[in-house]
Image (cartoon, rainbow, N blue to C red; front, top):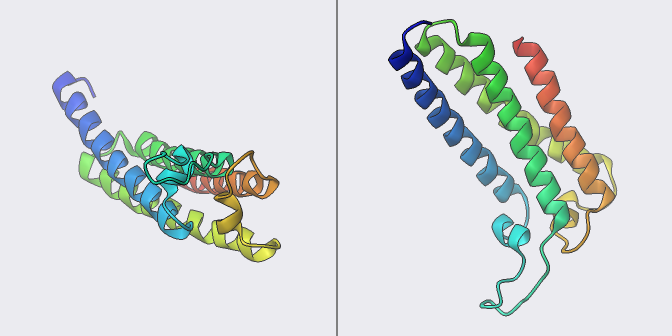
Length: 151
């Protein structure tokens, strides 16, 4: 593509589309973890009186979740960028949604295969728990598999 204004417009459209999907991915993770994910990441604010420390486990899982979904979106855009914008957006939306769904399924698979409740363990304040490391690795594994299927 040699037309700079068109390329810039495509970049804005891709960024907006990916941004919406990443926000959706964050809210999905918030829905499947107990409590409010933002509060788990920030810790107690003092105004609510709990003063709880942030959950580093929640931070690791949320970061891996976002990177995983961003990698899928990147790959969908990168591999389809030379097609028309409509086709590339359909691929981006389809694989972006698939990445979110597969991350949900993998999260629940890890929870089913390990003792205890992953959703509760992830939200415990304090240092990173080993199960959170496994959940983060599983999320990144989903990205690798989906990215390979796109390419």
